[in-house]
Length: 235
Image (cartoon, rainbow, N blue to C red; front, side, top):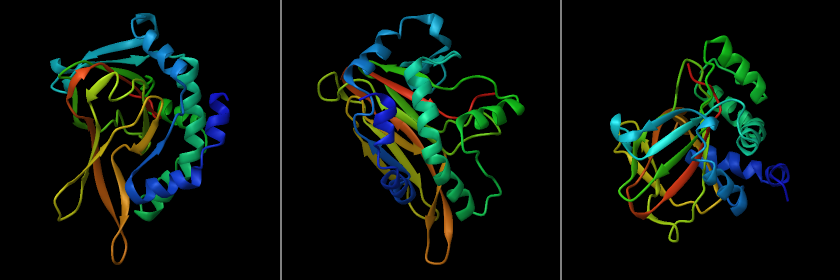
């Protein structure tokens, strides 16, 4: 089964329900083991990337990540292009629930065109690499005036086999309450879709905005690679 078939067979109604209720959703085995290994094997090919970030140099954590150049590798482009129209309706329902006058287009090409109209021309998909002691501090990936409120990651290594620790962490900052931490441990090839910066949560009378950040806990051993796909481009 190819990637298109896997995405078409995903229960997007269930994904929407999880995004609405929790701010994240998991899709198991969206990439095969071979596809994961192919992405990892390309990490050393600097012709594929526009920029390399050493995280400890910027206070972002400990590890390294590389932003892809356009044109994106086939699998990365497919994920970005095929997932987007399935979650754009959820994003639009969030804007409506929160009374935000913003509508996201139905296709990735239209979103990319909108970004380019606002001088956001640089691709944002990236691959991240952590070794022992590596981690990613809590953050949000916005990159400019135009930002889509969801993004995705795919774990390319197997937790418990290739690395220990390195859990994916979401922190939900609830109004007038203490923050809530959510710790997830996706397996090799699993896709995690989550909110980029906020989601609506239903209160007793109406919806209110809940801000969220994400990061990665410290690895105690091994090596962890992750594919990150942000749908909007950067300024």
